[in-house]
Amino acid sequence: MMGATVLILKVYRLNPIEMLSLRPVRPVVWIAILFAIPSSYLTTLGVFQLVNTVMPAPQQLLERFAEDVIPKGMPTWQLLLYIALLPAVCEELAFRGILLNGLRRKLRPAGLILGIGLIFGLFHVMLYRIAPTAVLGIILTAIALMTGSVLPGMLLHAGNNAMGVVLGNDLNLYVLRWWHFLAAFTIFGLSLFIIYRNRTPLPTR
Image 1 (cartoon, rainbow, N blue to C red):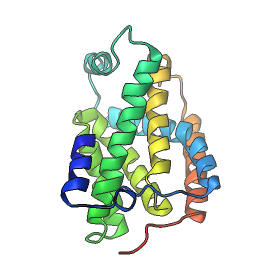
Image 2 (image 1 turned 120 degrees about the vertical axis):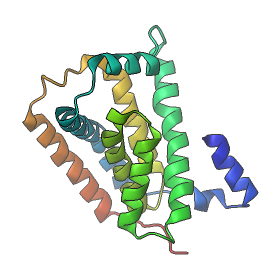
Image 3 (image 1 turned 30 degrees about the vertical axis):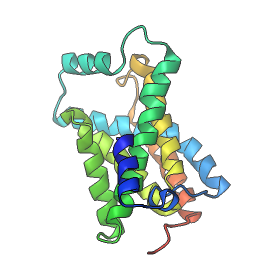
Image 4 (image 1 turned 180 degrees about the horizontal axis):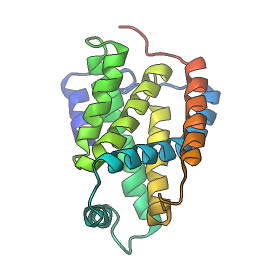
């Protein structure tokens, strides 16, 4: 994915800073992102639970998927590098960088947010992951539009992945109650509100 991004930049002689939205943001945005990491993680887990209620995922399939994605015996630092950091960097540059900037003259903000979020969800292939991953993609696209930068979403994406690596199977969804998800959703909503109030949108072209 990173190779395709670099190739597009070179072939079309694009400005990396502009096309990848590598712009600084206000300091308060980073604070909001730090609160958004755990709250968005629980929020997407709540979405997964709702989807799982309507369309239950076979437990064996989920366990096999977890084993394929997180190999046993691999050191935690390697898992964080290969599953949390690198995918976050590569996917954000591709989806919220190249793709977002390529489509933003053709689509309204709502269309961009929903469209890129859905494409992001479909990119992760597994049927039972599409809904929660699409929700995450919608959130990341909205943040990119509000901040005019891919960097805050990159941190949120990496943090979300890292929580999945660190918590892994230790987090029992059945122990969590509705108020846990409500609290997470509220904190996450406040984080997005702070980002919105301190927005620095992408410049018009």
